[in-house]
Amino acid sequence: MEPETVMRALADGTRLRIVNLLQNSGELCVCEITAALRMAQPKVSRHLAILRKAGLVRDRREGLWIHYRIHPELPLWIHRLLESVGEGCREWLPCQQDVEWLASTQGRDRTESCKDRA
Image (cartoon, rainbow, N blue to C red; front, side):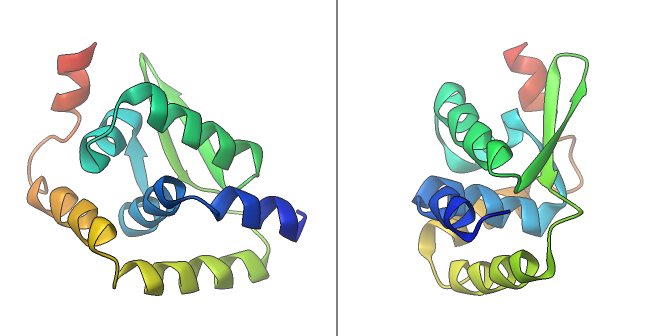
């Protein structure tokens, strides 16, 4: 993986927020990410495609839904970079709100929002 490719993929606030959500949650459906970011699905999907093309995230299809997670086989330098990004995101209000939304859905089936959109 080229550093320039990785840095370009992370050089957007929406993509930083997505990476932060995935780091905090492990794996999320596109609908969950869309709801947490309070953004339209096509916009979120476009940003996820950029992260996937850069090799930062991996996707998994389950019926109609696509789930994303941080790629488990990233080089050590990228893991360190993402840890630093996560530290910065903890201080950024949009990321805080995204994580709070996910926390507020714990114990409930977050994929219900996905089923409503199917």
